[in-house]
Image (tube, rainbow, N blue to C red):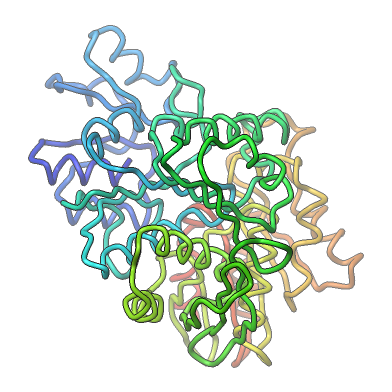
Length: 449
């Protein structure tokens, strides 16, 4: 929503917004664009009456502004409807979809197109450090959009990506997530089938061949399909992956033959997989090897994706958006591999709509094996979740201890920070994972250290 506000401001519209709680990095982002944000929802925020209201998917029909919107009968659109209308109506859309990896892959694709001189438009769910903002209108023929499977609005319960009219789709992974809107894995797969069915015959579906659910579904596509992966029989493969001090280097094979050798500052198998999908797209569009090699090596990453926040007293603090059990597991494994020989302290806030529920209670217990010490607060905002359906950090602590892992749970952030200050020592890496602001724990910890 912040990105869309930025696009509309750039197109010359006067934009205001409201939110219950705006936190970094989007709070700074909106302030820099001089877009005023009203804290909290109120009918007063709709006066004087705007020409158009764009309704985000966190807004319920009982929201006070939604009720006033209905009473005033003002024109309104959902987020994806507005994005299509104002940002990429006449462009070829490259939709990056999947349970994991959308933000990094969207940023990679946008950066490659940018450095190839194609001036792409894009909308990304995080802030790429190369662009310093997560949207761009662009004058080129392509628009890169992060295709979210979450629902569109209270008046449209279908996934957002069904509005984007894909020309090319990258499909990174399909797992059960968003337990607040999806019944089960089959329900999630049903949404992705609809996306695959939207692909035009002249388009391309770039599919992760390492994901068995994806490989079971791609035959339904009416367009060509290119598979990629780190194992198995994919058309495109990454092999000989070596993690060096500043770069991860690997060789790309196409149909079993050498294609290109690349080095990237990204690390972790999941990120190499994301990058490989970008190589497939670059080949399809016709980007030259020298540009591809140089661009991949210069990629700066994303805010809140394995981002270094600071180092004090020899203790390195990283921030990551990971919240799904698979994302937590892969992120911890990647960080441990990157910072060999250093003790890794994993701090995880179960904050997403799914992680605050016990739907993944058992799966999380298997996500922290690469960490040396684990600290988890009880989930916030559980008031609307029935007691019997709530995630328990205390139970996670007990389950981790059964796996011979050192783990501690806390009622909230404050005692967790105190424990970190007490337990950390020079050489440690503290990996903080949350899809929210986590009470500004990163900077509070660094101040204390």
